[in-house]
Amino acid sequence: MPRLLGVLESQKQLGGASYPPTLERLAELTGEKPAETSKALKHKDAKGRVLLSPLGGGKKKPAPGTTLVLLADDLEVVAQSDRLLELQLQSARKADAPAVELAQLAKGLLTALSRAFKAALEQRIAERRVPRTIGVLTGKKPLFFFIADAVLPAAGAPALPAATATDGAPRPSASNGARDTASNGARDTASNGARDTASHGTPDTASNSARPASPNGARASASNGAAQPPPDRSRDAAPAAAPAASFADRFDAAFTALDRDAGGHNYVTLRALRAALPDVPRAVFDAELAALRRQRRYSLDPSDGRHHQMADAEREAGIMEAGNLLVYVARRHDA
Image (cartoon, rainbow, N blue to C red):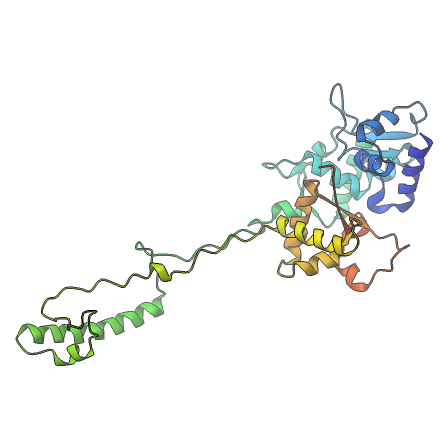
């Protein structure tokens, strides 16, 4: 138990996105399974000193990925933190209802924490102060939502195909149509004149001399009136392009390659990953990475500055959350 409290205290010293840790993160730091850590936190030495929120109830166990572990003395500070707001919104949102009412966000928390959290949310609205990743619709019942959930169309959606005519050919624009009408009219006039001349018994010298020979070498007759079938171009058609790889697949491949080159420590900078996917706009990259994090495939960590002095480019590539600049990506193995 002393070791567990020591780890919790060390996370508090780091602050930012490190504190309060989730039950899942605390278990990872102590090398235990979440169930073992949860059991240890029920020990008499932890009662009154450590709080879990939400607690769960009855047979419902706390969700390790969204349950915070905090020291009892820090309840007010945690209630005002961006971290609690983000985790509560992540837990309460649904695919068909991504916006969550203020009162709903506080459900499931400890009574004292719930009261403090509601007051903090109301103060946030009054001061127009929320994390960069979250938006609020104000009113009698304010709604909180993740900005990424409000982006339409979804990132990576294919562009709309060009309009087509009923025969499947591309529909011409007005300027093309005008040109086609003029040129077709001129061609039709000339060809009709030639056919009329031929039908009256006059050799169609000009059209016959210009018309290419048929495969057997005989000249095509103007008097037969039969239209020549178009050449078969099916064999010349280019093969269909393979579907583009998804962001998740490309991100996985880039992370694997960069981590291997760096020694396999499961730590890659956001700067390196952005550089590996240069065609992905920053807003799309961040939204897609947020989705991977919600799927518990990757996590982000800040730099404590003790082992590596960050360059300006690394700072610019980072993501600011809860007052902390996240610059490292790690692959999770507990999904």
